[in-house]
Length: 217
Image (cartoon, rainbow, N blue to C red; front, side):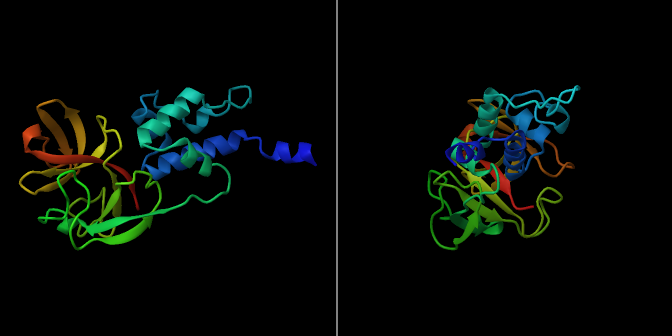
């Protein structure tokens, strides 16, 4: 009986790959998108890479998993919950309508939720204790985000080139865009609307910037 119990705890090839697929999905990415964000070859997590040409199972390396976790701001504990059939635990976070995000007093000086108008939502991948969510209204950010979509923002998550971010300026404007470059003096942002050109904001004009780590689409 003891031997059988131990055997049941051995992780399988499929469980590890399913967990990576779920990790990518939670971050709003494809397996190749997750690999790119982690600084790996885009094909690293593709299904075609999971079995060799002669039919042998190919496992992801510990290094590639560690980089995927770092890229999504996930912990090893949350990755473990994605393995097998154990449901992941959602966390209740503050929720605000996107149209109200630019209102005075909605955030404190650190970019954390403040003031009135906030409700709550239970969302996955909310490991950052300062995570908050914004609910889209209208189709100004379509087709990426549509009316009713919820995006989860993590102020504590590392931000890299290519990440989708929320930026609030000192003038009160709240922008959702893709970060294309970040220096000590400026941010280069690509609007989600492909018809608009890139925009540069001086760092001195930015109140805070935080990464979008999950979307409800």
